[in-house]
Image (cartoon, rainbow, N blue to C red; front, side, top):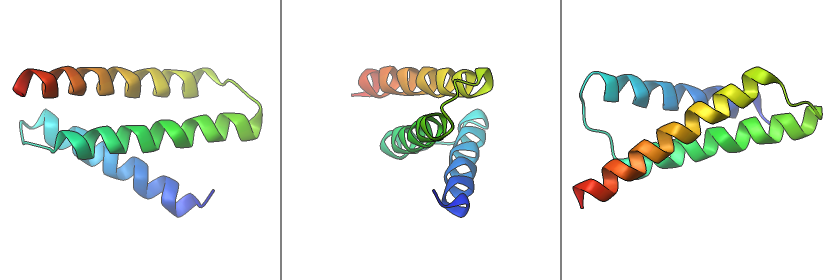
Length: 78
C-alpha cells in the first residue's frame, strides 16, 4: 500500500474532524467515506502484519464510533 495514499487519507480525516470540532459543516457522505477508507487501511495493515496491535484496534474503534454518530446525525437531519 502506498504510504502517500495512507498519509493523505488520514490527514483528510483529521482535517474533517477538526472542522467538525470547530462547528463547521462537513458533508456526511464525505466524512463517512473518509472513515471507511481509514478503517480499510488499518484493517489491511493489520492483515499484512498478522498482528492485532492494541493501538490499531483503538483507532478502528474510534473511527467506528465516529461513523455511528455521523450516521445517526445524518438520519436525524433527514
